[in-house]
Image 1 (tube, rainbow, N blue to C red):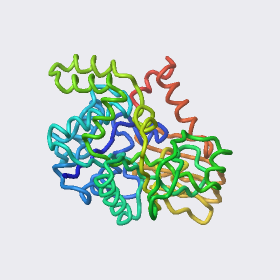
Image 2 (cartoon, one colour):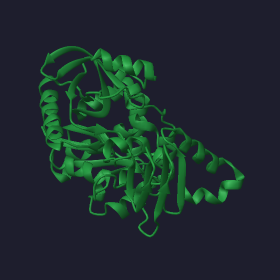
Image 3 (cartoon, one colour):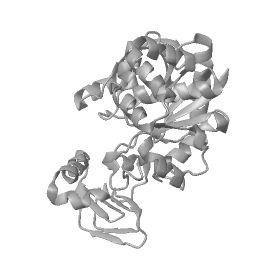
Image 4 (cartoon, helix red, strand yellow):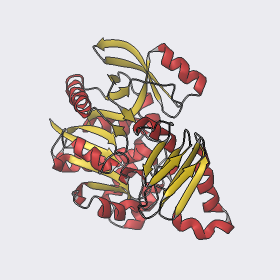
Length: 356
């Protein structure tokens, strides 16, 4: 059976504004390398299958960004959602499109924008998961061994051990509060949900047809429709729900591969301390920045023409990017969404909406 990869690239990454914009969402950012997050994901996919079997599903609004930032990627393998309706619709659209091109295959569903290190381990785990899915005909999800009581990720509760690092899944748990996250870490039977899974195309489609028949029918109609306005109308009528809620939580016999490669979803600037080295004063400094008598700060400057000098400040996040300077207290990443909400809704800030 052929192997395919479907890269999910529909998010914006609002909590990384102003680095991440509507015109340049999170997956196009160069966080730890001279390649963007999505370019790194494509490189990993090329170690799993051939380039003609690598596909991307994303929003139509990002078409210009894809043409600009990864122009060499096969345009015929980019599947555009007419409008965003969450991951159940996106996966249904992507998998149906792949089915038309390559027939049935074992497909690895990979998010476009996590930070992954220890790539040799990652590739081995994906290939092992492909083999398990072929043998068992079951869906295999990748769980990450937690290293801290993280409240920003969903969790997978493990049931019985099948062999080595392979487990049956008891249930999925949504993002917990800090107290429960600490309990999960201590318990040892909970893994972070990486959002990566492996299954055959036919099995994915059969599950969607059975559990979300309306979504399946409307996605198929979208693919069959030629008129763009009609595509938007049909797709917009799909129930907005995640694949986890709509499909995963209703399935039996899910297999989880317990993994220990470095993985980080990089949901906000506070995560950069886990990815970048810190100086002797516990500062994360990226770009044209100088700090003096400053402690526990995150300072990012992606503009080589601008110099940031900081003296005598502690526990502050500062981000300079393309005409915007963002300043807020460390670990208050939710304030970014509040700012973006104000820019979108307040009349006195309407002239700033081009900065979103």
